[in-house]
Length: 291
Image (tube, rainbow, N blue to C red; front, top):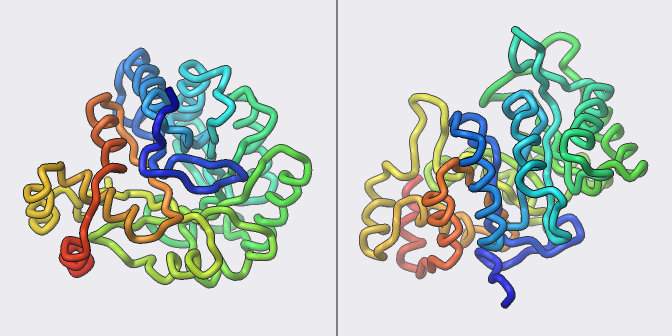
């Protein structure tokens, strides 16, 4: 029997993907046992997830290694999405890697670590603004040069689609001729600072992939699950606050793709189940006014 796609499907990178995918970063951030991480990845695929988001710099390469161990040989329908723009530099830890040759090196490393000939989609993580690392000195690279390198990699068959991460609306529109398949920006029911970027995606039919969909992992910034309004809606519907936050994102734009991350099997199953949560007009009106 065919597995139902969580949240329905959207065309992405030339294939139909479930609107609820999986972000793999927490598999290394949470410091769980390797067998637990492998089990979570395999369970995600069992539940119909066919979009896994990773980066070579997550866990200094450990994240890609887990994905390969858990899922290789990869199901034909699985879309692997990676990210370039940073790298690990030994004791220095995570550092910017924005220069075109560094982007190419990051893609080559992904190909080797994931064991593929082509990465389905590669996101360019710009470091112009928070959160996280900021570019300085020779890492201040113009967007056109970076995208030109990704286009060259696409023409060589090493990547399938080009995405952008942590960008504004003007940057999205600027590189439209290159063909952008998705934009990854921080966005959730409490933080809509990138609303104009979402509008640019709407205008051009680009997939929207919000990171921090349930609030920021950075100290002092709000968490969706702690919002009284979200909690009240969750109580009235008999679901969790996290599921309300994810369902709101799905309702916000038909081409939204979610990549909630977790290292816990039960939380994974709850996240996937959010695809079945329906928010009526009155509830959406309440949540739309939260921010």
